Amino acid sequence: MKPFRFLADARDIASLAELRETAHRAEAIGIDTLVIPDHLIQQLAPVAAMTAIASVSERLRVGGFVLNNDLRHPAVLAQELASIDVISGGRLDVAIGGGWNRAEYEAIGVPFDRTPVRQARLAEAIAVLKGCFGEGPFSFSGEHYAITGYDAYPKPVQRPHPPFLIGGGGRRTLELAAREAQIVGLAPRILPIGAPDPRSLTIEGAREKIGWVREAAGDRFEGLVLNAYPSGADPAITERPLALAGELAERISARSGMPISAEEILEGPHCFMGSVDELVAKYRRLREELGISSFLVGGVDDLAPVVERLAGT
Image (cartoon, rainbow, N blue to C red; front, top):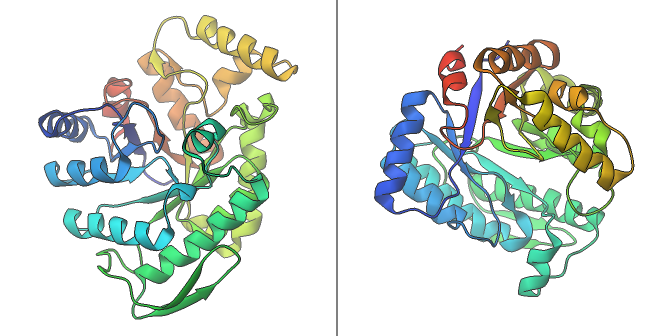
């Protein structure tokens, strides 16, 4: 089994001194990676925050969770990300997705294209990023991007490129991740852009997604790291997991018109509530039964006693 890797969210608006304190706390607990979301909300901009965290930490990896491809040209993003990899001495993860929050697009006048268009643009952007990270000039001609004889600098420290994290809840995006990523994020389909699918929160839904990844990855599958993250409710160390999961189940059932139970949510890989012992057992079970070894645990301190028990194992 692959060792556990824990990611924590460092989105809060903070000074460099505060980021340094967060980074040192994360390193002491056993967090592997600090990540920054990519939304036009009350948070630090991800590229700036990732650079700052890399500069005040010694071991932590940094990444987005995840960068919205539609907000930056991939060649420009490649220069920014490669610069972070150089500054950090090779501690960058490239986590990128096709974007989903229509309200943000509308607020700044960026067209919110249909899902297949955003997925196709993401696939092209990944090709451009890898081309920029590679040796020598390259050209690319696609529907969305055109690159001609461009030799991007700086080159990242990690060769042939930093690890890519690509995630999704639908088959097409997960198949892209299976072919192109090193870390595959298993996302539930409950975002506010269509009818939510409660089954995608369950362990059966996760098995289906992993099956799609396995089929598309072929010989690559054994080398992939599978990631899961909490969705719908913050992770919590609590003596009331069933009651809290029941509230989430009611909300999801009401939105979707399809029933899901608190027990199904608690069993699945997107809800982390319970005692320290219960959560330790759940992480071990998800790794043993599904092969998921990478987990976003919310904020640095949200599940600190759990991470301290499992880090490095």
